[in-house]
Image 1: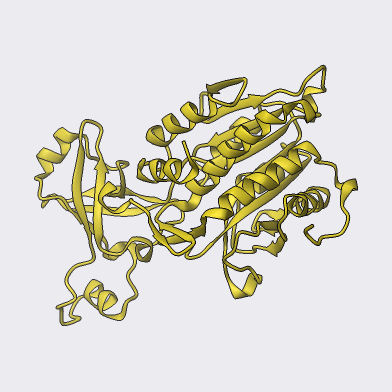
Image 2 (image 1 turned 135 degrees about the vertical axis):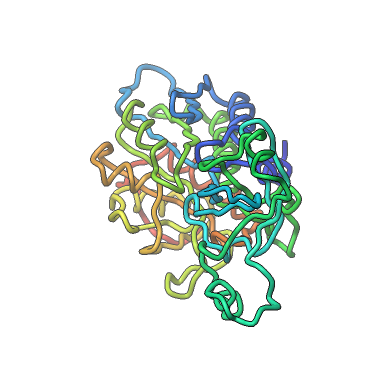
Length: 359
């Protein structure tokens, strides 16, 4: 499947944290085409491995991680009138979605509904009304209109803890010149890049000097629990997170195909040798690296490194406009990320760093 078609399929698939089944099924199917074996662990992570030829040290393996889950909402309370009160699941904010159609993922039924803040035609006589008029909407102001009774919702399996996601009605991407625009390019675009990396690496596997594990993780947006579980059980001591990277003046990053090489984030600084090797790999792939210290950011790799599970970690990101909103990436940004990852995996040593000018 060509990259844009695969990306659209992943964008349509619903994957809130802890309920990533639709996304996981696509990733298993695609990785099975290129990996030596694929399995799903007890945490719900998808694990695919491409093994190096000959006898290699298992501890030299490199893990490449991208996450299955998306920002979403979770039911806090079912009101007597059938409206649902919500809190964020992951890094979601009300502004991330606006008033929009949503799908309620009940235990027995998926229900179409509408996310609401209430009418703009209000006098500001209530706190929520004042928030709406000022544009300062908080989760306390948000509710879901279901047009179901509380008893009907109970029969559908809707309760506190039920996930609520953006409706498939609004998930279809569209083209803006050289870009794809859609919700949930975080982390669907990196998942496509990881699958493309596996495809390209399979062709050059004879050059591998270590095994490569491709790990599609659960619960990254909330706690990095999937990555921590996988890293504590898989061989290897190096993890590379594949992410979207914010395009912002404060980080000196641009919306282009050139990969962002993250040097540090909220959980600490990435391993200098890995950062150097990723930057050199970017050049070998024909691109100019965008090194950035993303202070308001975190990844599976930085979580694993900060807990002492790994000796080394790095993060490569696809430049993305409007992260955690209606996002935009260059189509070439996905293939550039994959090409860079292949170069890194074939030559991960930092002692190969040379000029950072693309050939």
